[in-house]
Length: 299
Image 1 (cartoon, rainbow, N blue to C red):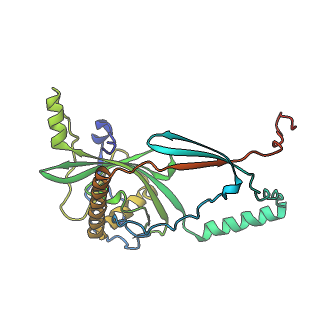
Image 2 (cartoon, helix red, strand yellow):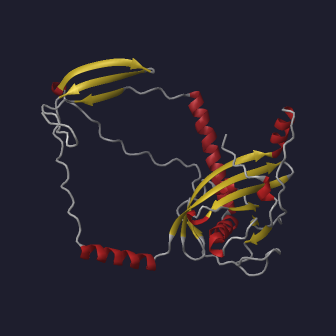
Image 3 (cartoon, one colour):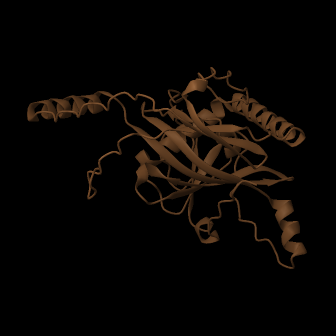
């Protein structure tokens, strides 16, 4: 079962602000409407759909001629055979030569080139997101999200009418409307409201489901909970909702493909559990021990 990210109900009781993909600006406390958002945001790479990757090329085996095997011992453990072989020493390549420290002039030139690169290329960052998708038989999914912009330590909390289970595993990186690149690191989970209610009732308590804001049945939008964020902090979330609306059909198809592949893989592993593979460990002894540079003495 995926982890459930719980957020204090106190946060949910705060002021909510609506952001819609029909609005390209940060609105006030009223419902956003009007200006059309730029469509320059795009998903980078392909959307994983459960299709297995091509098989990896087999790695060359490590073959030791019989004449170079000095001693062999075997033992059984965990349903497999472990073979330990002492072999004749193998000549290893010499260690790389130490890198000469760069000159001050080269350092200055590198810093200059790096500054020019940052000026000419949009920034790239990692989005840390925690999402809980609440599901009910009587309403569409609603997602409670915590988002840490720019690694600043302060989080932004919002409700979304987007199903973040489609985004998790579906969008790994994207560009927003300013051309900046974002990669997503998301922890997420599902909460079935009816099931949770039954579990709490069976345990003699009451499940207190969070109060969810109202959304229209049109494009996915989100409502900020609590303090209003700076426009630059919320820009990636606006772009993410724009992409969700634009690519919803493909995100749904890919999610269904991933789920189908997961179920089939679990069934295959249950029907044919993998057997432990036999392993062989090779080692050799050096005629002269390595010198101990720190505190030890060589012989």
